[in-house]
Image (cartoon, rainbow, N blue to C red):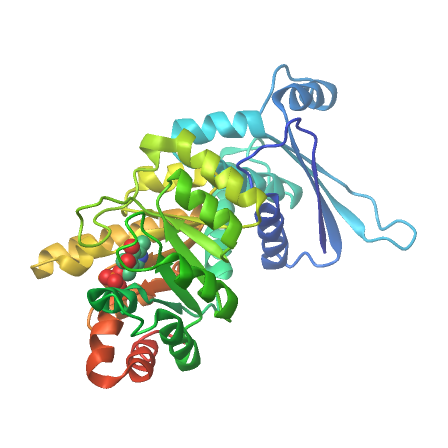
Length: 390
Ligand code: PXP
């Protein structure tokens, strides 16, 4: 089974992760038991698809997707072809905008449509066949989402900012967040998160430099989109950055980033980080508009803000906020984004969030550090890990 992808658009679509499309095509073929045939997928323009539409189907104008099954058997030594799926990214982008979904989501739907055609379904033959084909498309879409998440564990990344807050209270050298990060890793955390704030109220430049040298798992630098911090991140090269809003007077990050309201500025940060090989996450409220915007500007991850769920005062409010987090996680995952979550998570409210299939990683700071003062950091991290599904 192989998926051959060609893209003849100049310039290439900046927001479509072709590797993710290939992975989805491979999963779809596997789900349909197609193991010994090749699929050719062409991502193209309206002009090119209009030409193919005219030549092979005698129809005028562009369309969103074309599928040409290949009936012939394997050539000399090579696998047989299943056929060609051709998608116009111009039309797909217009349809995505009209449906308020990301380009990736629309391409996935069109890919499934084309693939189902190659497998012999044809909605144009009769109404019952149209119903059958739509059912199969829905089934494959759900199976694809389930399959992408299968067997994945939720990982824990520990935010060690509070260790630095305690040190800064006396302006000395103890406790050291660099040592704390090592203890968290030894206890089983797979990531260390730090926020280098513009006012340097907790983490200092020395900390992030040492952490870059010593963190053995993954260093995630939380940062505002300010010129100074961007320059530091590009030099430091953390394993990823998480863009957060920052206000001088706030006690902690108060809300998600307004990605939709500053797409141009943030797209340029994403482009610079991507060029330096640093994946970018956007810390957003559980709001589909913000998630869509994060996908559109090329972010790899979103981190869904769980603060309102964690701060809810009544059961009804908590359930409402939890539903928003759950829906946001699914929306982001189906849009091809990788999904993290965090803020306010503690030993009582984390398990339901960790059980959400779409979420890969939780970023937790305050609750772990607060418990660490009483039971020790190693134990506090292990107790949190014990709450996550494995
Ligand atoms: N994620 C982000 C983006 C944050 O800013 C913070 C707080 O620093 C956290 C997660 C962790 O939140 P908490 O300290 O409440 O666990």
